[in-house]
Length: 89
Image 1 (spheres, rainbow, N blue to C red):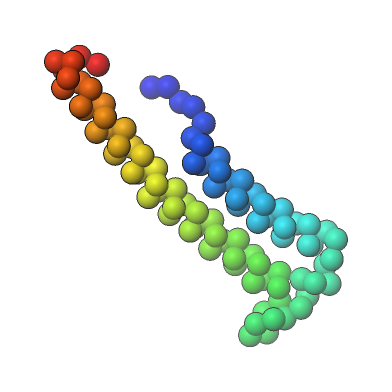
Image 2: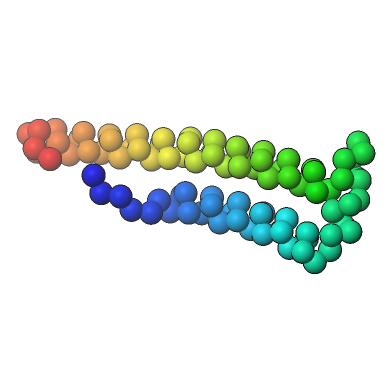
C-alpha cells in the first residue's frame, strides 16, 4: 500500500492551523482582549478554546464524510477496471 499526502486532509489542517494561529497571536500580542467577557461571564480565551475544540471535531467530521466519498468512488472505479480487465488489477 502506497501512502501519500491527502490534499483534503492538508487543506483542513491548514484551516485549523490558521484558526489556532489566531488564538496564539491574540494571546501573544493582545492578552487583555482575551480577558473580555462577551458571553455568559466566560472570557474570550475560554470561548475561543472551546471553539478550537468544536472546530477540530467539525473538521474531522467533514474529513470523514468527504474522504469516505472519495474512497467509495475510488473503489468503484477500481472494481470497474478489474471487471473490464477480467479480474486482473
